[in-house]
Image (cartoon, rainbow, N blue to C red):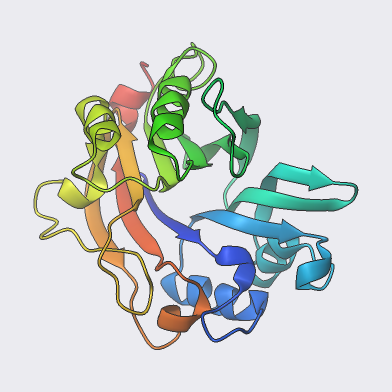
Length: 252
């Protein structure tokens, strides 16, 4: 069965808790994990505060990957958003802003991007997102992602991985809403006790997730916690190994 390793990480614009901005350090951690697909949140592109670097392209180039980027914030040439990087053939299917709560001031615009990855002839839809810090907005944004413009679309059939920084702890209502529709990879059979991802130095909250839907098996889950990841960002990276069931997927 086709296998794929997926890594999701909020890289905090490559600003470590030690105050150092280093896309190279982020790339070093990712390279050691050897993923096929990387979903990054909080990526700076040509922003003055991080040295006018295109962080998505710089990290992708260091890894020998192609990149897809969506800007949640755009001011002239400066951009800030999320990215999907991969070594595999891929197609960007959708990207855009997520709705805020009507009548509620939004702290920071949020977005998502969706790429279809060709895994040895099978296909995996990867949707990367970063949800609001505000609970009412997270509910609206989750409903939108599950709706007809995104994961409810006719061309989003077959295996799906919804990944990113959800700002959702497992006891929250919105988490349970997602978990009723999809499988939390850290809670897949045989994966052991789920591990927290935030804050990186002393993680106590599990807010970064990989949710799966369709004909996928979760084979391995790891939260990478070592001397580098404890300082490279304020989140820890989450790695999930998946297997696609191609005979079933091809009929979807």
